[in-house]
Length: 186
Image 1: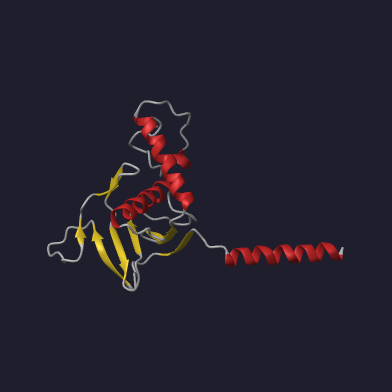
Image 2 (image 1 turned 45 degrees about the vertical axis):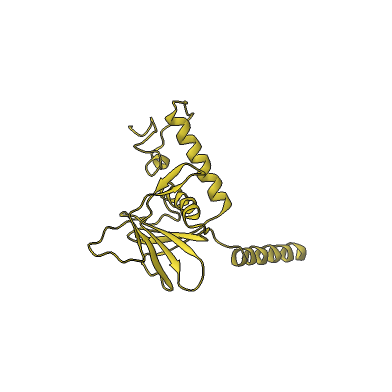
């Protein structure tokens, strides 16, 4: 019986250490736009008075993945060579632990676009909802998921039948909703 308690204590300690040491890929916290120690280098906004050191509303491209887009903002660190794409969403996330999949894939696309345009790989990006925001690490796994989604969307555009079915819980925030998916009309 003592071996069981020792094993259980060891297992709990291991889980605790892994949770502390292991980096989190997605961190949720209350929403704010605080970007201390960063300055804007790109903005999708079209202000009446433009600042010279900010690029405005240019379509950014990633030739490698054949995608393009316009993040809401790209920030650059005041102290190092780090950049952070930021996407602002008009809705709320409420009690959900993770961002909507389509929003996550949009930020992943901005990671790829930003890396190719600015020749700097963003370490993380930010999705800001009205009530919460997510800091999301730019991982290889996220890039692979983006590439898979892009390939599926291109196959759908080329008329290849996709073996899916409509599921409100999965489809309501899907990146394909209202675009290439035949199920989104339901």
